[in-house]
Length: 305
Ligand code: DHB
Ligand code: FE
Image 1: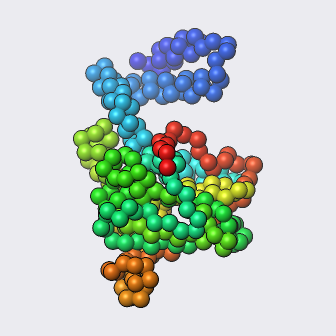
Image 2: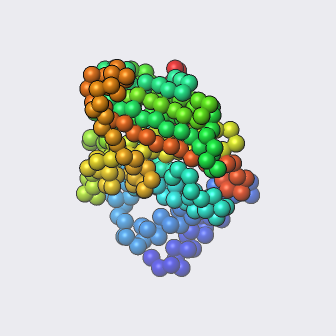
Image 3: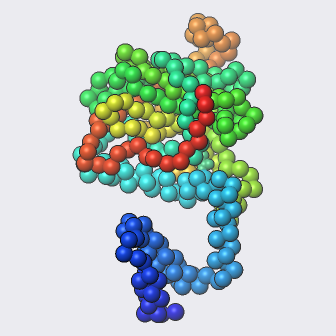
C-alpha cells in the first residue's frame, strides 16, 4: 500500500480515541501501531507470520519468558544507556556503572549486619569471598547502606526459580558497618543460560545466537539520600565475558579475582582448600531531583524469609 492509504487507515483508527483517553498511553499505542503497520508493509509480513508472532508472544507471556526476551534483544541495556545519558546531562558522572537487573531478583532475602554467608553449604563449587566498601560521591564511607546480592549456583541456576535449591540460597541483604564495609562468603557462580527449548531459546536459535550469560553477581546498593544502584560484577576469565546474550558486561565491573592458597588464610576462613577473593567497592550518587529516579518499579518475585 502507498503511504497515503496507510496514513488514512491509521488516522481512522487514531480518531476513535476518546476525550478521556490517557494521553501518555494513547501516544505510545498510536506510535506503536503506526510503526508496526509500516513494518508489516515494508517487510511484506504475511498473515501467517503475523499470527505466528502474536502467538509466540502469548506463549512467552504464559511461560514468564518476556523478561528474558527483553534483555536478549538488548532492551534492558538500552534503558541503562538512556539512564546514563540522563544522568550525564544532569551533571552526574563517575561512580559505579549500572547494569541490568535481569528477571531473577526475589524480594525478602534474609538481612545480615556487615557480613553474610550466601550459600547453604550444599554446592561444592569454588569458595568465594567478596568484600569492599560503599562510598558516597565524595569518597566518604556510607554506613548502614543496604547491599542486596543475588547470584546463580555452580549449575547456573537461581534459587526460587530453581525449586531444587533451598529458600534464598545465594541471596542476602547485607547492611554495611560503621566504615561502609560489607563482606560475603559464597561459591563462585557459573553463567546462566535461558531455559532450553523455551520461547527465548527458540528465538535466539533463529538468530543463530546463544542464550548464555557470563558468570556474574547481581547487586542493588542503596542508602538514604542516594540514588539506588543496580549493577553486577562479572567473574573475570569467563569465556562469555564479552559475549553476554544480555549485553550487560561493562568496563569497571570486571574486578580481578585473586586465588588464595595461603594456609593461614584458608584456616581463618575455615576452608580446607584454596578459594577466590574479590575486592570491589561501590560508589553511589547523591539524590538529584533533576533526573528520573534510579529505582525502577517493576513486577518482581517475593518470598518470605
Ligand atoms: C537473564 C538472566 C540473568 O541471570 C540475568 O542476570 C539477566 C537476564 C535472562 O534470563 O534474560
Ligand atoms: Fe543474573
